[in-house]
Image (tube, rainbow, N blue to C red; front, side, top):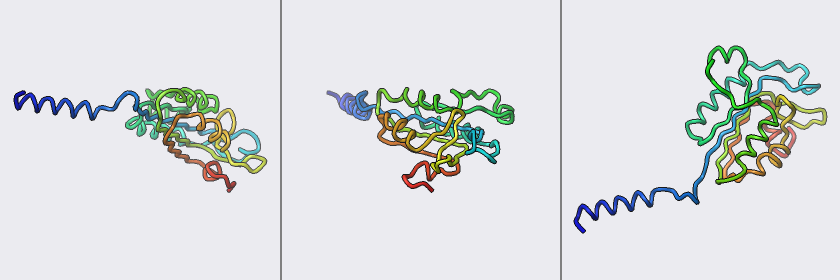
Length: 175
């Protein structure tokens, strides 16, 4: 084999060794939820409609699209945001049903790195338990960890929560 042939063979071997195998493929997904609406009922009494949770979700989704293989944005843009980003699309409303469906779609297949972002109201229910407000009801700690995240083949989950009472939703201690 000529010197050039050895160099070419070594170069090809390096490329083959550096290419990840399909069996070890990993996937990064981002699910971003932004909800401007306060929770329904007594838990939302006195809470105003937010102005920027949808904007924050939009910006998080833009950022995470740079690192994630799939990015899902669950929000409803208010009039001001639609005026600033008229061509921006969303993947669904900020509901527990849409979040369940989205995360269930990632439950099959490759090992995952998951970014889950929430921007919106956090509140305390009548029993004193903290939750995050979605359009169709509360997202509690139990639902988040025991149902939504437990079914994912994720080796890493990054939670970013921009809401009041976020620490209570993420911990075993009600704050």
